[in-house]
Image 1 (cartoon, one colour):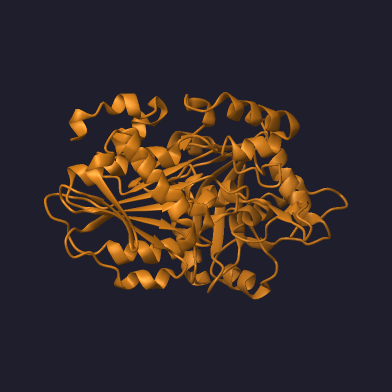
Image 2: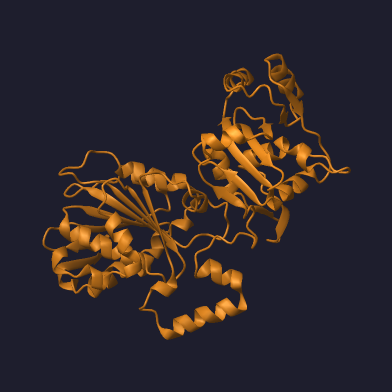
Length: 418
């Protein structure tokens, strides 16, 4: 059936790469994010219409709130079926809500995720549920809510080389710290995940009045335009660390480093321990972050042994001075270490110093946690929704570690750092 329909005439050119990725058996997760009116939902629904026709499978379509389903994804799927001229091939039911492919009896099932735990018992006897579409995924408060549903489906081995596929469509939330932005705006993605970002200006089917309204918003409120129609996580309006460079730092480069800095942010049971090895190029104002020791429940003895193994014990490490016993223990274990000094306003100053560098170069393979934390951090917001001059105090262990390690480079006569 799919071969009888010219998909290149129905599917927007900007989504052709997404369409091809859906045939790749190595991809399990397909993320379609972007601004409003960019045809994300239309394209996913078209893709799944074809899958229902071509394969003996069911597709589970989910919204966070069940009452939102009928007027959104249910109608969207009907629209895409009509667009392809397949309306006579399907039957539509409201109770229980489903869309059925007449020739085989498989089709679309619809569920609300008001209670994610209820999905543990979901099953389909005639055709396996091999796909889930999470529409408006940004309405889910945590990733765990989606994972519970995925785990309820991702169980038995599928017949005939079928594979599971999970689709997510959403407009990126404005807060950089939202779990979706932290996971899919990152330059570091799981190998089984395909991410597509779409824009309204690649959708030739928009009405002229729609374009005019978008242009009006652009002129009146650029930040709002970038979030709503370009799909940018604008945060408080200013993105921390626009000086980040993610690339491989070669062994040859590392051999030339002659201004080594090392820092430690303590942690154990809940908060992770973080050690960073860096090089500071004073002339070019570039900080290179090229090795890390990071994790929970890492004992001081273990960290010291790793540092000695890597011959990092000969360079002075500046650590958070909040744990003098840990500093003393590390000295006894053979680590050259001192405590960072503390002073009012030092956190903000240290963060500003890092932000003011020409480049912070991070090797995402050697230092995946540092790359993730520097990229995902956002500014704090006060009770009135206004941006504060201080970064969020969570998932910032690498940033604190970098501040400690570079303390002597940023110190002023009247400012000390912690």
